Length: 445
Picture 1 (tube, helix red, strand yellow):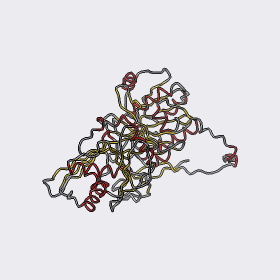
Picture 2: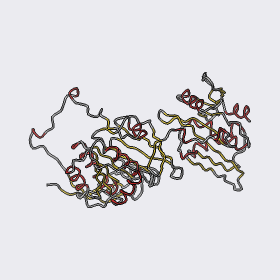
Picture 3: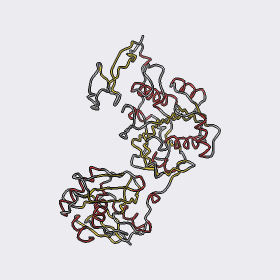
Picture 4: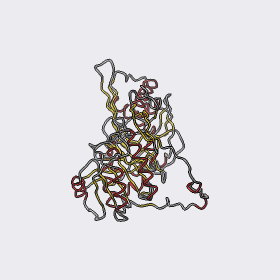
């Protein structure tokens, strides 16, 4: 008979300890351990026939090659062709970003290939019906269930012979085997593990929605991300309407692809990368530059805006939107050290338009160009793209797949590009190879 034992689990990362600790040795969080009672499931072997038999690797039939298209172009791109049968997928994002809308649209398309059970622990059936009517077509074999008990959900999924199980969200589900409340680490881990076993045993394709913490991480223990086959992150600025879908983990496809959507009254609509960019016929204002950014296998032309104003305070303000503030501080130090410009007396603001979040160091030169343009009150880059990583000594370094980026500039009608000092040749685009930022400053300002 199973015995009950008491352990202490970190609510932040799921680390277990036999006694209470003030600070978690795994994630460093303070006062995060909670007492949890669990069953001590010690297993033993009674008969040899109970042992699973190993299978020769060459004789195993690979069923994971079969893809189930969602018929949402950008989503299928990120998934590598569609959902994989019997897969376990987690979709996460900030509140209100469009997770439920996207997964409901997916459910409507998946209904053409099987029965879908949509389990909602956060919204009523009437709320889901209202969203579905706004999206449009409602298939007949999408069933909605308002339930919180994991045992009830799995039983109903089997009784209804569901091909797809969607849970919105995993944080609201609880297992009757545990005494802890929903959203606790123990419940999340137990429900996540039980759904994994259920998915692999029954062959039902399972999708769950997860929450995001205030620092941008997926809520719950890290083991939840290890359990699932695919982790998708939906990002974007709720004010602009654009959303970017990324694959943080994908056991059946690439993790370097991104999908681009726009939120409309009829749901999330796939859009092309150039929709993010409003070039105003290339008449850029002072303090703006254009840089081709590589996301996965796609190139986005992004507009980088900079604003420098004299500060009345002893400590200047450094503020960014969609950019890394630590990277900005490095670039400001590089400018001051190599160009002898007094920027420490200026408030500096950097904005990436379109709600994008850029971490690509190939934007270094474009950010410096925008800063210099705002500082000198001059715009020499109206039809010129900037591309290159900048080192601490001010040198401009090459970036990967530069030819593909330059082709995108050419396609949008740019007349030239400032690039690292390497041998390149792009027909119809005048290139300005540059060794360091001092050459950029002296040539263009």
